Length: 209
DNA sequence: TAGACGATAGCCT
DNA sequence: GGCTATCGTCTAA
Image 1 (tube, rainbow, N blue to C red):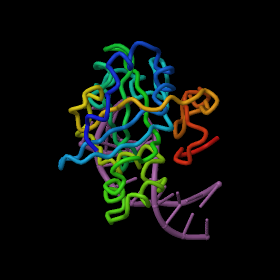
Image 2 (cartoon, rainbow, N blue to C red; image 1 turned 60 degrees about the vertical axis):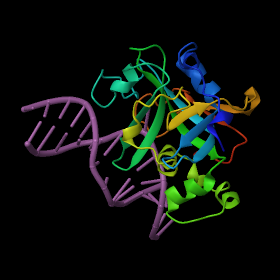
Image 3 (tube, rainbow, N blue to C red; image 1 turned 120 degrees about the vertical axis):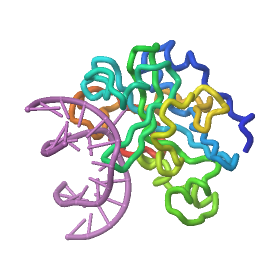
């Protein structure tokens, strides 16, 4: 699979509309990972959460710190953080520069390069067709980090540039009736806000509600 | 500089 | 459903 087949989402995708609308529209789009050896792995985004200014669950709620500084930077870049000392989670920075908002990519359906994803995750070999059906390779933000080999060193990566080792590309349009809007997961503040979106028909969603 | 804890996931019951 | 591994980051002092 060559990078020519992947058209990165333009920068304005990330800030022209409000973060909630951006989150919703990212469903069906494609996470593209180019490994050091030039091979690719891709996954279709099926679950996402929004974190906005004034949102008590946001890492930026208490202002700028060394960890969250990329949230304050230009839109369309990756914000990556380590959670529970174990899991690297991938966010896309949204809204205008200086406005610290982001969306957390919570689940993807593995598409291309699934044998690599399997190897990253399980440390063993598997056939593409087997790997493509394995939910653990994409159902959960920590799992995405592990399978796609994304860690804190990717923080700040430009997701709107096809030359980046990680970027987001255009994909399917998800019909409204196949999108579920619900509350976010694993947080203790802002628990009632319906700011999680997922694709109803996907078996790769981390938790259905 | 210490202490608490988190935008999780795996394994066990 | 419960327990916990594991460590960077924040907060307060």
